Amino acid sequence: MNLYYIYIIIILASYPVKWSFLIVLIFSLGFFLILSDAFASQDYIYVMNRKSSFVNDESTLSNNSTNTTTTTTLPPITSIIHGPPVFDIAQMDSGPRLIVLARVYHKQFSYIPQFLSCFINENIPIRIFFIVTDTKSDPNQLQSLLDWYQNSLNIDMASILPITSQDAFDIYNPSPPNPNDYGYSYTDAAIEYLIDQEIAGPNDYILFTNADNIYSTGMFTNYILHYMELEYQMIAFDMISHHQRGDVFQNDKESSTGTQFHLSVSFQVAFIDLGALVFRFSLFRDKANSNHLQFVPTEIRVASHTPGQSVSWNSFVADGDLIVKAASMCNKTMIIRQTLFLHQVSHIESFL
Image (tube, rainbow, N blue to C red; front, side, top):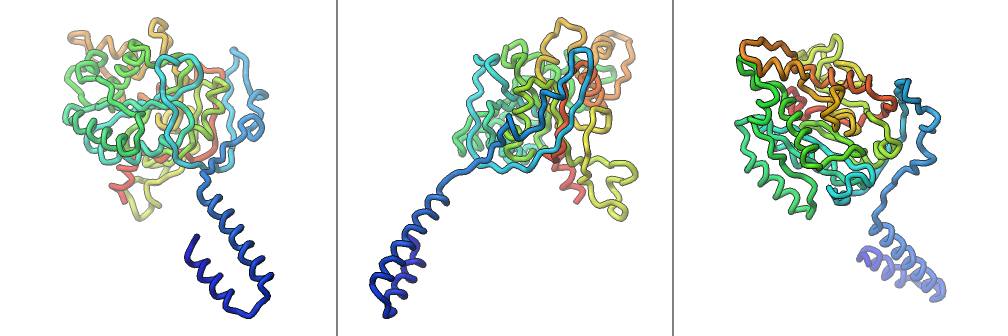
C-alpha cells in the first residue's frame, strides 16, 4: 500500500471520531486502493470491432470487371506493446500475414530501432526482411544491431535477406553503370527470392519501405488487418511526406512551414509513396504471367543486358509507375483517410 495513504489513515485516526466511522473509512479506502492497483496493473488494448465499427465494406465491393477504390475515415486507436505472433513460413496459406521488405544502407542504421518499434505492437504475424542496397554498408554491422535489439526485447521478427549486388545487376545492369536505382533492382531480386524460397504465399501481404520510415503503432492490427481479411488487393493510408508539394519548396524556410507535408494519397505518380500502402502478394507472385508486378520493367531488364543497347529509365518514379499499374490490375482497393506514415525521418531531421 502506498505510504501516502497510510499517513492519511494515521492522521484520521488521531481525530476524536467514532470508531465505527473510522473503520468504515479505512475499509472504503482499502477497497479503493485495491481497485486502483488492479486497474493500474491491467494491460488494455482497444481493438476495433472489425465487423461493426468499420464501414460496410461488403456494400462497396466491385465485381471483377470494375475497378473500385473505397475511402474511409476511422477513429483513432490506442494499444499496448506486445510481441507480434510468430511468422510461420509453413502456414503461408492459413490466413493473412504481413511481410515488410525494408531497403536500408549504412546512413539509415541508426534509425532501425525506432523503425522496428513500429511493428512490435501488432497482433498479426509479421516478418521484416532488410535488403542492404549498397556495397558500402556492412551487413555484419546491421546483423549485430538486429541481434542486440531483438535479444533485448526477446523477440524474433527481423532478418537480412541474402541479396547481393550481383543479384541486383542480374536484373538491371545498365551501361554505363548506374549504381543508384533507389534499390529497385535489389527489391525485384528480393521478391524473386521470397517466391523461390516459398517464404511468401499468395494470401500474404507485403509492405515495401525504407528503414528510416515511421509508422503509427498498432496500425496494421487496428486499421489494415480488416481489409486484408476481406482480401483487398491494395490498402493505402495518408502520410506525411518530406518531398515538396505544389509551390512549397523543400529547402526554403522563409516560405515553407517545413518539410512535413500532409498528403492525402491516391494511386497516381507523385501522389503516394511506396511505403504508404500494402499489396496482396499475389500481384507479384506469378512470374510466368507477363502481367505480374516488378519494379524494373522487362524491356529495361533486357536492354540493360544487351551489348550496345542504350537504356533510358527514370528509376525515381519506378514506385509510382508500379502503383499505377497495380491499381489497373485490381478490382478491390482501399484508401484509409488516417495519417499513419511519416516519410523518411532522416530527410526531415536534416532539413530542420
